[in-house]
Length: 268
Image (tube, rainbow, N blue to C red; front, side, top):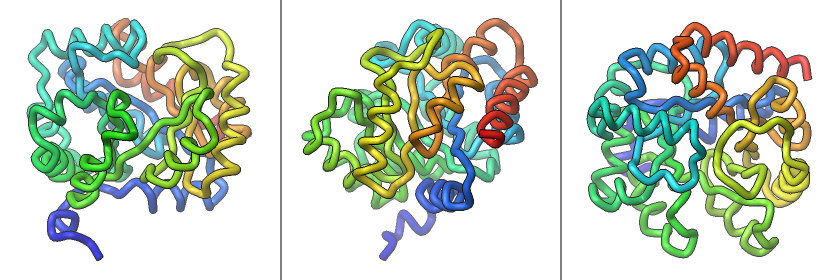
């Protein structure tokens, strides 16, 4: 049964949307944009969706993004310098009708400061129906997961190449929306080649859960996306798209890049 707050949540829930797309035979494409990165960041978001993104991560910038590499860090610094805050970013999202699920990607300090219930309610009210908190340990996240679920926000959990089988099973059981497979041991960022550990982890995850399994970290090109999706249900692409925005290429170029990856995934 849905809670009262869940019933008033805006936006598209993650799980049914991604399961439906996957079950239709489509490889999932999750893209990323740093909230507040330039005055046209929501235009970039809409360009990603128009080009075929199945869901979009919204980076809520934080001063110490320990899991992010240089590109996302630079995007966060620029957004923060321009005055970006979670309420301001969510206010902009609340005015959109994206038509695909939105997922907040941020760090637990922001959640702790606001309080679980308030933060989750803020997300759901803006149409953000998922959350990724990479620095919140599994052993300490149950309270957040419960409060988020009551507000209609699905908590996406991450698994790494060195996650033991028992912990992997718990992550798959508790993750909502999709399970985020981390391709390599390291921070986000573009790589010349896809890590060999990616396919191994994807196979382990697919053998453990029927939830959508989406692989991220180091996926920069259409060929890499196809390779990463071969053993999984799809991919996350982030740094390569933010590099385009940081270079001044603009939302149209981001849309073109997403369309190229979408086309490659559809061709297989």
